[in-house]
Length: 172
Image 1: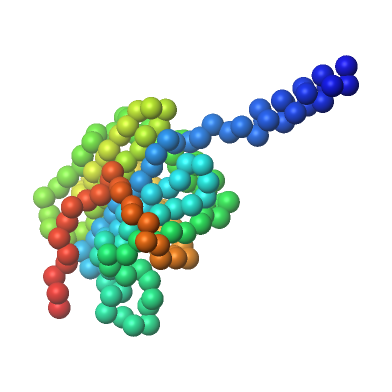
Image 2 (image 1 turned 45 degrees about the vertical axis):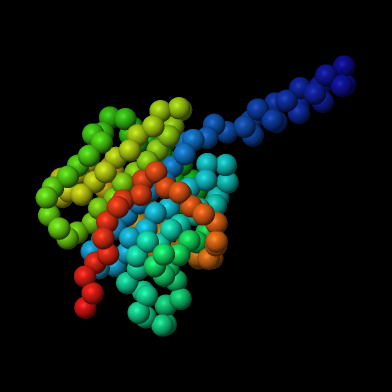
């Protein structure tokens, strides 16, 4: 009897601690004309993130050590950041959105979201002033998050399904 109670307690504890993952895969790429172009991959099983800085305006500023162009980094999300990310991903119904929001202008921001959730994949590309507010708010949150992460350089090879093929901004 005592063994059954202990076994039931262990099983109940295990079940309560099992949390359904909010995503299977998630990565995000962002670029703007004169500041940055990066991709970030979020890990669904822990708080690690991997970042590829494709292009950075910081390259010519010796006072700023990172991020630098063509460099890979990793960082760790705080519990609050991880909860906020999970909240966004759980609440946004990605499949209801179009795959592309595009306006033909040259400057400005662009981003791409790749999410695989419950076995379904969605890739959303945005280069528009008329994109869904919910997606823009999420993109802005990720952009600000990345700016505030403590980056550590890594030699790990990174691949992003959201990668945006763009050219570097003009040289001055």
